[in-house]
Amino acid sequence: MEFVLGLDIGGTSSRAQVGDLDGRLVGAGAAGGGNPNSHPPEDAAAQVTAAARAALGELDGRSVRSAVLGMAGVSAMTDPRVAGLFEQGWNSLGLNCPVRVVSDCEVAFAAGTSAATGTVLIAGTGAIAARIEDHRETASAGGHGWLLGDEGSAFWLGREAVRHALRTLDLGAVPDAGLARSVLLTVLDEVPADEPVRVRKRLITAVNGAPPIRLAELAPLVTAACADDDPAGSGIVDRAAVELADTAVRARDSGPIVLAGGLTAEGNPVGTALRAELGARLPGTPLHLAGPGAAGAAWLAALDHDPAAPRYPGI
Image 1: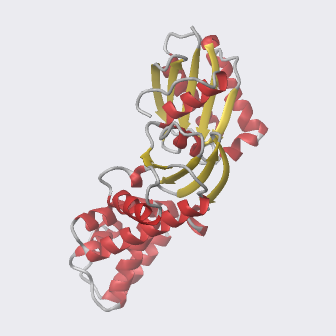
Image 2: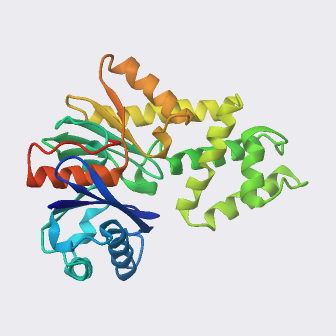
Image 3: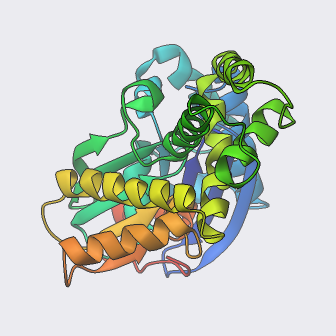
């Protein structure tokens, strides 16, 4: 039999799916983060190889006819040394087919719709939107990183939460409730019984002393505050939805919109507000949630081999 391999690679996990050409998934595997932009390339290649090996199981790698690897920051793979490390991994698996490296946007779009053209918005730690034409990314908006953008992302939510706490302290009060108090408890491990100006300095020092991306860990404080009807949390969530919708609209031309990433999930207040915002701006536009990215990558690999290949379950 002939098979395809799909890989969805992120900073915290690497996932793989093997499927046949009749629309059946026959193997799955997972390993640690495999993005060479956020991990040493040797470690990244090893994790991706481990996920693929687990998905293949007892299958001979030579039976794989095509493979697609989706990854944020695919530019790293243009480095010959990085590409060589991954090539060694493919060789160890017995793969002798092409491994096409694409953006995570292409994989997420394929995991959310059978359409060949449309828009995908990914909102997780960062935020990016892309225009997809014939299953290929042709334009993008956002994705500028924590320093220059990623508005509406988990990083942005966390930063806005800290800014809210600082504004509360600026007014001369140490918060005893709500989002501001949650920020102090999380960042400082306490709500200090001290003068607001001293608490303010401690908070600024603690946040600036940690890697900027740690702000993304505060995003759940915002969504929890929103769920508790805290006006501060609700306001930040509503602004995040507007920012994310702006990003999607900048990238959009036509077709459905696929939403991917933790913030867009069912039950997340940001995702709920985002769908309402997009529905108001683009009435009648189909909105889809992306399924497993590895299955989307496997389907793209199947399309490379057979343009009429059926989609896999769950996408």
